Image (cartoon, helix red, strand yellow):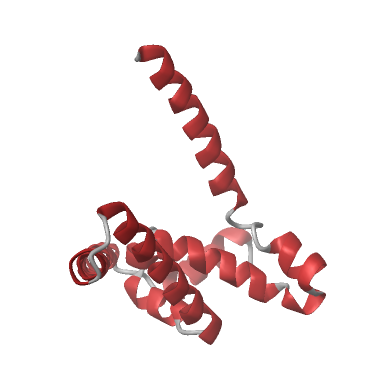
Length: 144
């Protein structure tokens, strides 16, 4: 059997994902996350009397902590397998990536394991976010 025949057999027996269904599910789950986030935000601002910036900060903390706990308990991957990118793209995905990296390397110790590997998957996001912010600040300073 050559490579061409092998690929034909594999593609014939591979499970095909329904892209349209995945897009709809991700859209709905992402929208639901937005609604939940807005409810938490309103709870902090209306019920606790916090300012908008304080409410937003606490909302981010809640999302990061909840997604990290769900990752640690092993539920986040199961939820994401249903929700697709509706949960991976927001802040919850960033927290999940950091927690997963930390958990994967915890057996190597706090320094060599968790400390040196926690940013392995998210380090590039932080780096390019900082570089972009730096250049946009320079552009804003020149224009204004």
